[in-house]
Length: 411
Image (cartoon, rainbow, N blue to C red; front, side, top):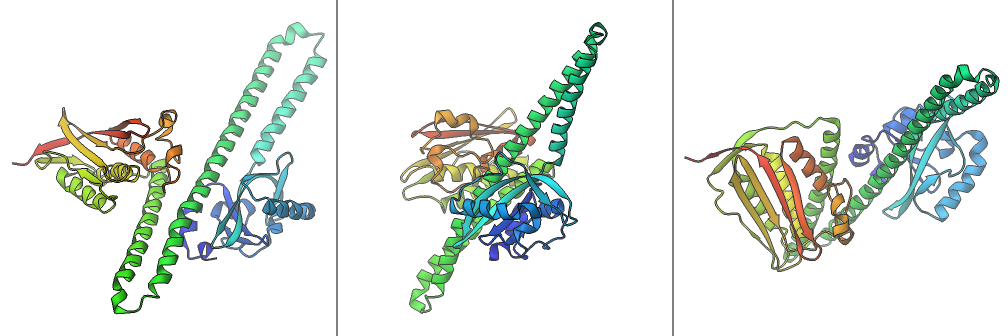
């Protein structure tokens, strides 16, 4: 499967950014892909597990039962946590057995069915649980032994109870964080699989059809499919850039470059590109009186912000509608307003619109990853700016961006 070949950077780029182990197997339980974390957890070198049976990573005594569970899972394919109600164990290359937690996610690519497992080494958690059990046993023993000397040990018992409660609280918090993180990453992987599958299918179809149009008079049809391929590739490139932006933002590797540039340069570029996406009858109202403004800011970030908001306005608005782009400068602050006449954001979901991977119910049928607004907000806050919005379902939205800049007028 080309998606998991060694020289394919898409799976590697997405999987290596995740700290948990990722193992992908086919219907025959043969391992077709792993990430670096999985190799490290189980003690294998890069690509050493590829082609091996999944039982390689499962203790011998569980082999028979695991095959039955796997076949049942494939027959009733659905995302779920593996091993609910029982302990799971893995075996490293050196033969050591250790406890694990695994989330399973079935998916299909090009007609082939796979199961993706998100594996976590929970050795530390098990040790913490044992520590709590030992602490409870120790506490009970002390109570029995020191009943006659109760007046000498009251303070000690209080301290022990406090320690137990703190340990239990920390463990519960740790478990909740692990569950939340696991669900978030499983959702992320499902999202990526879906968002890549659709454009890749479109590229494959157009590439196949282009080869059939060999005559000169069929040039228009060839150009149509070539344009489709270019647009799909650009969409995939934008998704990858968004995921890379998230990784840089989380690791603090983002660097900003301030420079002076005409505001009209960025606005013209954004509007020009957006015009190619307009639906039938849609139009963008160009802002007034911006030609004299030369500002000092990160040009690429400003372009990213305006592009994201205007493209969203186009995507979520119908035909024969208007998108207004308004700009004003006052008290060393530039304010941008993007006003559309689109589907709007349901009131009950407005508090979550800047959350990563969140998409409103009325936007689920449109392509999107739910990370664009999160990236925009993060960049603006890092640069001292802000973004807010007002919206009413079926009546449109207004997004307002403010950025503090040094502004000079052309002489």
